[in-house]
Structure formats: C-alpha cells, structure tokens
Length: 322
Ligand code: F6P
Image (cartoon, rainbow, N blue to C red; front, side, top):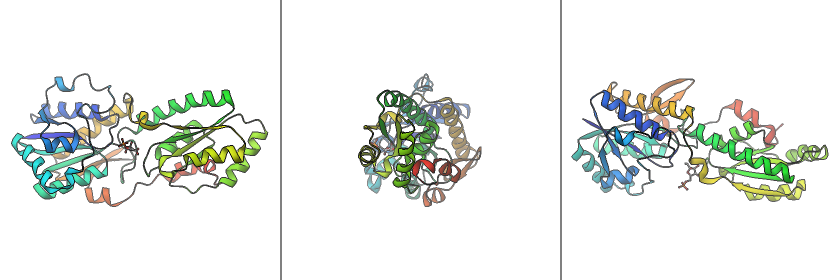
C-alpha cells in the first residue's frame, strides 16, 4: 500500500517539516511514502516519486515546500482527474495527505467521490482562514516575518516623522492584519471583519499629534482594498507625510518557526493516524483549544472562519470603534 503527499495552493512555512514527518511515520509503519511534486498539476502529469530518507533530509528548517505547489485549473475537469487517478493506480497509491486550503480539500473530495481515493487534509495557509480550525500551518512564521518588517518600518517612520500604511496578505481574512496590528502597537488597523470609523480615528490621532506623536503605523488587510485610499486620507486629514508598503510574498517565505515545525509534525502524524489506524475515508485535521480533531470536508467547507471576539476587541480602538 502506498500513501502520497502533496502541497497545493499558496505555499507556507511548516510544509517541509510535515513532509519529513510523513515520510518518517510511513517508514515506521512499513507503508510506502510517495512524494507528489507540483501539487494537483503534478498528480495529473505523474510527477510522483517513491520517497527515500535522503529526499527529506535537511529540509526541516527550510521555508516553502520541497515538493513545490500549484493552483490547478485542469483538476476541475473529470478527464484530468481520471489521468491523476491512473497515475496513482500505476504506483499502488490508494490514499493521500494534502496540505493546502479549503479549495484543495474540495478538489480532493470530488476526487474521492469519483474514484474512491481516501485523503486527509492539513490546513496550511498563511491566511488562517479555514473554518473549524484555530490554526493553519505557516501562520506563526508569516506573523513573525510581518513583525520583523514592521519593526524595520517603524525605524524609518520615526526617523522621518512619517506615517506608513502596511498592507498584509490574507485574502478575505483579516487575521494576519489584526494580530500584527495588536502585537506591533499600531495606530490604525483595517480588516474586513470590522467596520471602521475614520472620524473617530482622525479625532484621536490629531490630538495625539498635537501632544507630540511623531509617526503612525497603519496595518491594512489586503481584503479591505483601502491601502492607497488610507495613505491619501492620512496625508489630507492628519497632515502627515505618508508612504505605502505592500509586504507581498515575503510573507510566504522564511524558515519555519519552532511552532510551525512542531505543528507540521503534529498535523502530519494526526493525518497519518487517521488514514492508517482509523479508517477515515476523507477529512481534515483541525486544531482547537490545544487538541487535534478530524472534521468532515463538508463541515470544513460549509462555514467561514471567524476571528475570535477577544482579538477583535483588542483591535477595536485601532479601527475607530470605541
Ligand atoms: O492564500 C495565500 C496567499 O498568499 C494570499 O494571502 C494571497 O492573496 C495569495 O495567496 C497570493 O497568491 P499568489 O501567490 O498566487 O499571488
């Protein structure tokens, strides 16, 4: 029996530790581990290799994913899913561990319905936007990359008495922005999950500027789509020279933090436990309140991730909600 592993969608730190653990556990259980390169695209094209210890040595500290990733359009078509199925069959692979977001889980659920290939998903995306899990692999590393970037930006902002509008990733989810804003002590934070009140922000910051405030840090989630608008608003309404810094893909890179290495190991071992010992047909490993669970794909993809009320409360003032 063979089990494949693939990484799909946006890469993130922690994928390599998970791949390493996956291979180790397969060997311990005398199961053949297969590395599927280039995500779902590679599965269609048969870029599949039986893993050796050597393939996964010296990878734990590396960011990204050594088996690469893709966003596959072809996999939406049954004819290509059938090609992927034939590729797996020719190697004797009957189940899969997939690291990615809910779009990837949906794709594999369709694959399971078509051909009965069992799979378990591991939430892996810096966006932290997957329903029923408090944590997705890669988030801690991304937050630390953002923290370091904001620390640097603060140096130049304070040297020049400037405002900086820092745009962070997250798609429709404001988790990265809100946690970064709170932990950097930002003055402004705009996220899709919260209404904002510019009048109240203006009132507060103008009086702080009068009292000597020298610079401003504003953290904006990409999903709000207000980065340039906010820069112009600050210049006009607060009278402070402002710059925009879009952090972009640096947020996806970097060596995995200790937390992401540990979580990579844990997610991988829970996923394999589900496939090897619990006869799970398809599901997602989730993490809540310090414990791991397996949830059904239907439950995971049917809802929207919600940022905890406590976190939103901590950021209220930064959005002008008093
Ligand atoms: O989903 C992860 C993510 O990094 C998002 O935060 C971002 O919007 C998107 O991927 C960027 O996608 P791409 O790498 O295709 O430009």
